[in-house]
Length: 179
Image (cartoon, rainbow, N blue to C red; front, top):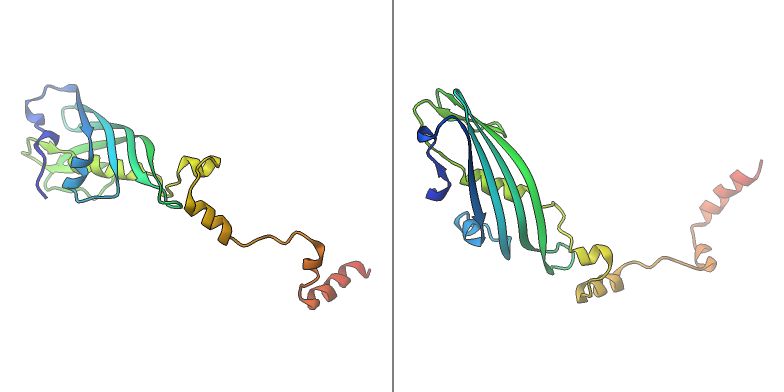
């Protein structure tokens, strides 16, 4: 996968201390990763890059919205996301990204590309169950919801229906009352 230049931070030329980077993410970013689950997106990513003598600390703050489809009704809605992640970059003999929040770069590296981390952090910020807010509060008027309600099993409300239970249960209930 080709790396996007705007997400490459050349840290060799930076002074020690904190540096701020800001990115505006839209659908073109996700098309680069061939990820097509979003109808639309507008996400702001603030990166605080803290360069220290022996390591680098990156703090990602993600906020914005993703237009996604509801898992129940397939209606599109804007899902607000807000999350914060930290990444520590150390230097070692060889590249190692096996840890979730620790990256080891080989000695002699002079830049870091953070596009993969931004992509993963945004995708991980989405709830696992995507439910339209109108479904939760009952304000969404959808044909799919009406059909689901129509096909859902109905509860028995009158006592006559309860008599249709298995007669063996009635025998067992007598054991409770025969003391």
